[in-house]
Length: 103
Image 1 (cartoon, rainbow, N blue to C red):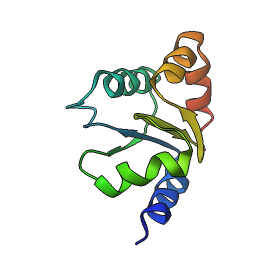
Image 2 (cartoon, rainbow, N blue to C red; image 1 turned 135 degrees about the vertical axis):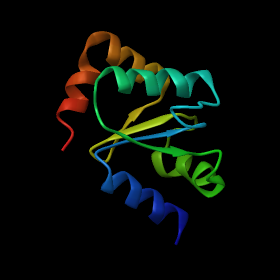
Image 3 (cartoon, rainbow, N blue to C red; image 1 turned 90 degrees about the horizontal axis):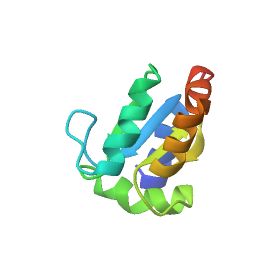
Image 4 (cartoon, rainbow, N blue to C red; image 1 turned 120 degrees about the vertical axis):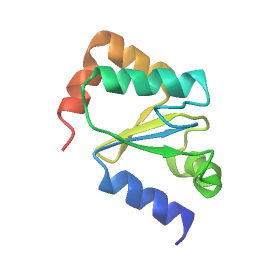
């Protein structure tokens, strides 16, 4: 499958998806770890993709999303952003609202 189509399918078929380095249990960077922890603290279910284990996704996601770095969070098919934005939303309480409205 074309990597961009695979990314599109992942984003569209998961209400909340985190593209990260590593896994929530074994994050491979601090930014990915903090982002995962913020989502966990919201009490939401979310899917993760380890971009280190998926080189085609790691290569093509930045052009798909027009966001150059990892992690990347998508909610309801829309890019929310990376660690800094997710942490701002978490501190303001907006992340909990966004995740609660994910359908």
